[in-house]
Length: 98
Picture 1 (cartoon, rainbow, N blue to C red):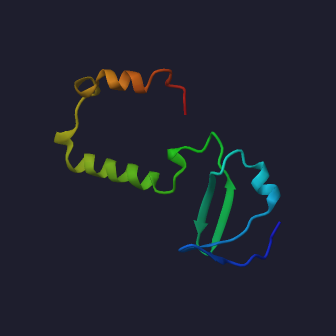
Picture 2 (spheres, rainbow, N blue to C red):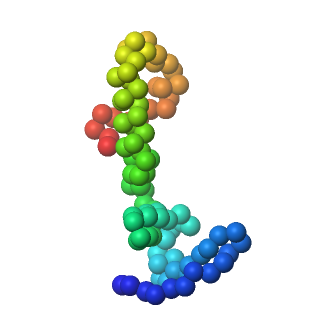
Picture 3 (cartoon, one colour):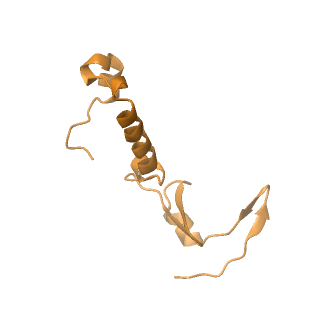
């Protein structure tokens, strides 16, 4: 469905109204806003939307890898830096989790 809508001023920003049916289907007020070129896509945020789905996440990981390759002397074995906080953080996570 394609709808023609007008932008309107809302505080210091611009806004556009969305169909009530879309808003009622959203379980929270969080949505995913994706801007590609001249298009904006709004979709429901789901439980599957994670940090990895953020557009700049791949760029961040590439920057980490590039830095690691430039400074391999800074790299450490996991057992050297592992602490109990990591055990707590990763409790319940298995190698099969994506």
